[in-house]
Image 1 (cartoon, rainbow, N blue to C red):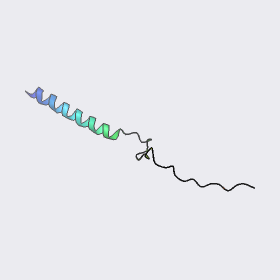
Image 2: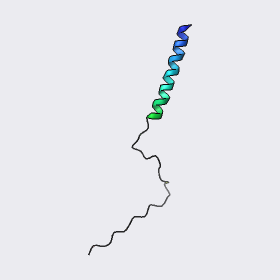
Image 3: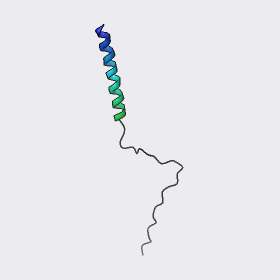
Image 4: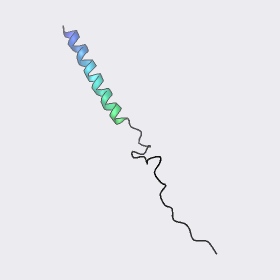
Length: 51
């Protein structure tokens, strides 16, 4: 009977650890907020002509 409790407890802890790792394992190099694909491009200042 104790073996069943040990297996269930181990599986519970394993699932809990897997959920925590999946939350932490986020690629930080990707921007969190992406611009809409149809949004107009931001205005860029036009440099003055060099004389």
